[in-house]
Length: 71
Image 1: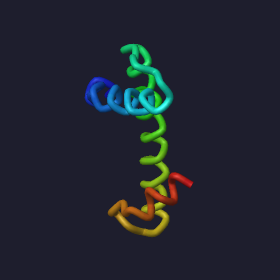
Image 2 (image 1 turned 120 degrees about the vertical axis):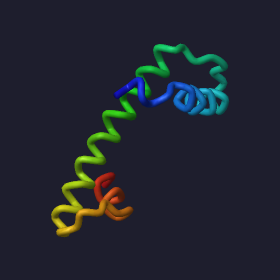
Image 3 (image 1 turned 90 degrees about the horizontal axis):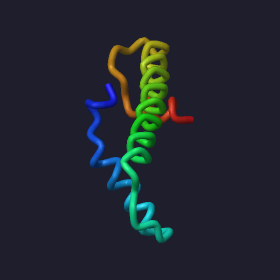
């Protein structure tokens, strides 16, 4: 699953954040770790959003399900 999510967008996020605090470089291992962490958090949110849609007796996951899952 990790390889399905490209590393480049994560590197861009880290570089943008680094520019704001003066860090010019990002190691590949840092980008890989952030990618793994983001996917773990995303997976938990998705599971909670699916549960929220089932609780509401819907088969479609809606924006409010995601918002609720994030809280």
